[in-house]
Image 1 (cartoon, rainbow, N blue to C red):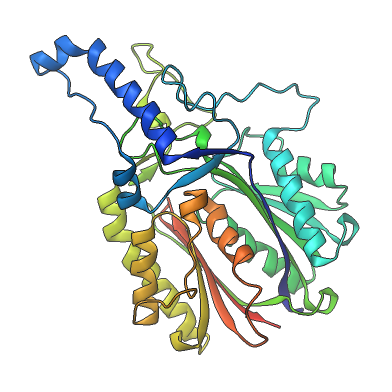
Image 2 (cartoon, rainbow, N blue to C red):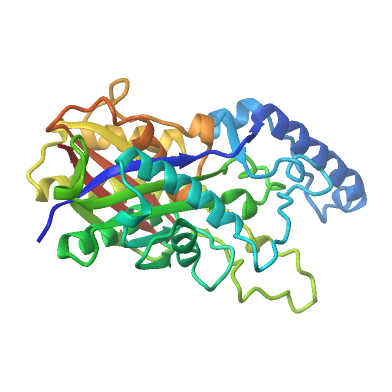
Length: 373
């Protein structure tokens, strides 16, 4: 058995930024237009008017100030309000593969490795642009990796579940090194016309190189232990898959085909689940919460992270102990905790422990305990 380490990370960030101010202007223009067009129904009590959004509401609800997206022109058009991503020819690389390859090259450079050192690619993300062939095989081919690849989807926990799969294979000797990459185009499955969630998501891609410790450079992060858990719930859902069909009346604009969540139930049910999961995982590895130097949590909501950090540490986290990046990136699904790890891990000293944790639809929770070598 080998030891598995994280030897490099990479983050691809889109060029387009949408601020809360821009988003609010677009949403309110859409709301005014919809209310005017449906005034008779609203007056008769058959429809409810759409209320305005505001920058203050968005920050208070989420802690988000901006987000990166692959396309902003369509999102900021009140007549469209979704990204305008061109249909690519089958002979061209897919958009997810392009994002993934960029992040993978950054991770390889950080680890001091090339594609010839890698034996597998796992694309772990919330939504795939197609059912098959696997995005991972496309990424593998574009990088020049000789080996294998496969896709996996555990929603916002995809990256940590992918890390467990990679670490298990590296420990067993199935592969020397595996790239776990999460290209997330969350803007494509967000309902930008829904005031309760129009601000939540952004786009990004992250990559992690998991490899044998005897092949890795000094200063890598040993994967001490991984743990995954799932418990089925409909409180976070997206029905838009390749089996999508129109309603019996022929209408295709089904609200449940985009991101949906019951936020209050999610908050109430997921937070105790995640806190208990992390604390139990630490206890089973005989690591005290006081010994943690860093919590890299899923970046969904600042209030959720603050709650979990306080529960796990038994106190309010000090500055830097539980870094947030969602104010800049928004919720990027499975990539969020990896962005936080990539940007806020260099300062840890040899022997320092930390936990990477993600959670979301499923419900799903994945935690990875690491130690700086």
